[in-house]
Length: 103
Image 1 (cartoon, rainbow, N blue to C red):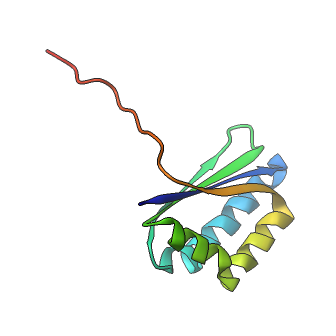
Image 2 (cartoon, rainbow, N blue to C red):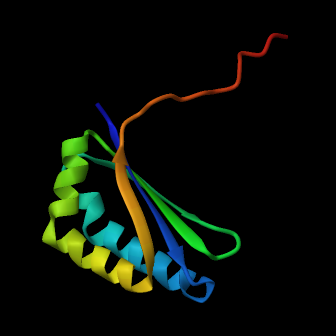
Image 3 (cartoon, rainbow, N blue to C red):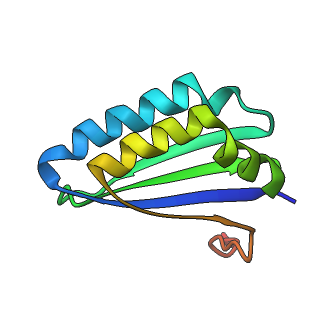
């Protein structure tokens, strides 16, 4: 079963870019090298007030093991210095696409 780690981080708009840089550094140096890693998407709120991290994993155990990795925890501490994170690991509950179009 796949798992998705979602972290919604509230941030001072003046520090949004700095937060994105720390998230990028952590992803490039640690996260993408972890077992079970599939992808990371970073979303920046247009008003600068939030950054959302969406990380896809092969399974919840892979996501949880990464959260326990001391190197990942170092980046989590840096992130918490820049903003207020609200994170969790989620399982798929539904996915919707447009209906098939007829010609």
